[in-house]
Length: 333
Image: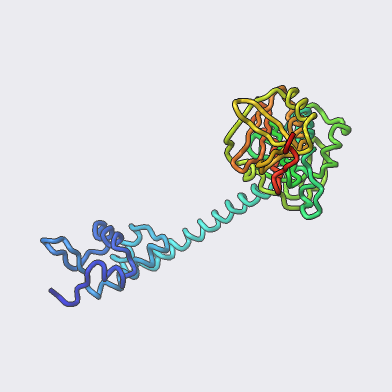
């Protein structure tokens, strides 16, 4: 065996080509091995072929088609013309790609647009308004998040202890998805502005137009509300809204919610109870649902989800109150 012969693995390392590529170029007639064992089929190459392998590696990484690669190897006198032609093609492709990227950037930077029914939007504002916060540490919570995603406009209110989400169908949708924090005063003024029966919603980094009422978005961070709503529910009960409101109105300020046997029980904290809920927050969420029946669910974090029975995408999430230590006020009662 010639000592100058290299195994395909060794040749792949010095020639900067993977073994699979060497097999391909052998089959394509681009770079044949110097010797093929007739029994084992093992390919072997000579050190004099390393230069050709390195040239192939560079040209393929430059995107040179195999046909042009063969032309370079078989007609060296024409190689410079072949490479110059490929360079011009790459430059033309780069110009075209840059133009497409500029157009894509403009599309992403453009505002999101859609048309909504005024009454539905005003009702959605009312459904989330109670949960809007006023925490100096989170200035974004002083507004309502408007999230235009696909054919749905979500309105989100959050004060750090509860979240309210209301959805509005959107027609004539165009542009990217958008999230804008709208000042509460702007949304509160929609009814007094006497908008038409339906109107535009236009949202962007510096654009806020709701039913023709224009303003400046709040430049502030807003919590990732989807993550908070994603937890799976473990227990759920549907109940008449009037009955639940009447029961909660007579309950203590902090109530323990039990969902057992298809029924809702609201009770004062007892010995051993670890979590409770604000009665006020519970009533706000139930009333904001604007439905004859509401579905109550305790999720895996023991947060309470309140949704209209016929509109599960509208959600009121009430975070629990940790009872430290568990209340003993009910002992002996």
